[in-house]
Image 1 (cartoon, rainbow, N blue to C red):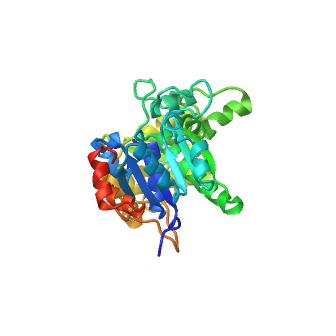
Image 2: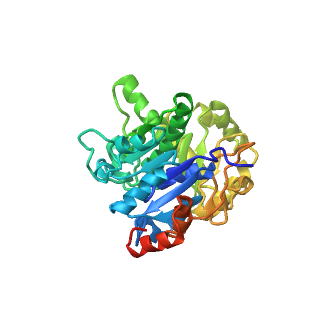
Image 3: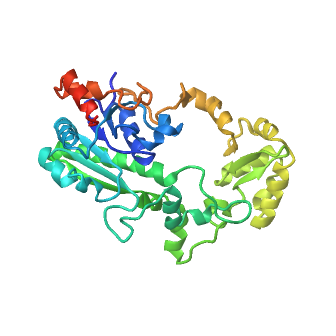
Length: 369
């Protein structure tokens, strides 16, 4: 069985995290992703273990887009490309002579996706930024409070990975549209907008009542004792997510404390639950609530998460990779190849364009590839 996107060719000009995550998703689904990197160094993330986690299922070539030959080769590659994904600041691709308006003249069916911090317009258009900055501006960091009461960085890069996911969705929507119209289009995804899109549960009270809840007050961010993190007797932590009355009742029934279900004082209920959870170790709570129809989970370490029985059943962590997060009955997503070495497929890809080995050698000697 082949992947759902077999036959879709993607030219990947992205680096670091958001763009590579996007193109990896497309690669997992069967697209032919060609990662185009600068000769000599390539993606700056190559010096980090992160690189291997967001660049599988790709072919790597080196190409100097600033050179005349490199520019010409890219345009030749464009003839058989379906998608170009770039993650530069606005204006960079135009200065290279490779902006959407130019590329669309060479390939009217091209889907051109741009990922940038703040999008292609607006007063912040040219600002640099990282995940923490976008989440801060979107209002999310103010609700991520540490033990000292101050906002702290989120452990997962919500804006980066969210934008990568949204870009993949937008690209596939453009592919579907092209099937109907025969025309490609440009797609603009900003990390700031992606961060804002994750705010429904936080912003709903503001839009409904005119007042934003203070940190610790939103229902799903510390407001409800039934939905919180609690310390155990051995210094570990567990989570209770019993939002629905039936799940909370099932939990209370198991520990023989049904009377707590009628306690309306949130501070008093949280105090009671804190004392209860602190009376047993994490392992004891896992054993106690095993099989109970309630929403409970231990706070796993990363090692525990990787070896969790459910993770093993789904094959989420195998062969040094996080598996694709989706399953198909007919066109499975697969890990076909690990992250490529810099330029590992340069000769192969240029050969597909019709260049001879001698021509590739000459280009390499001139620093074009």
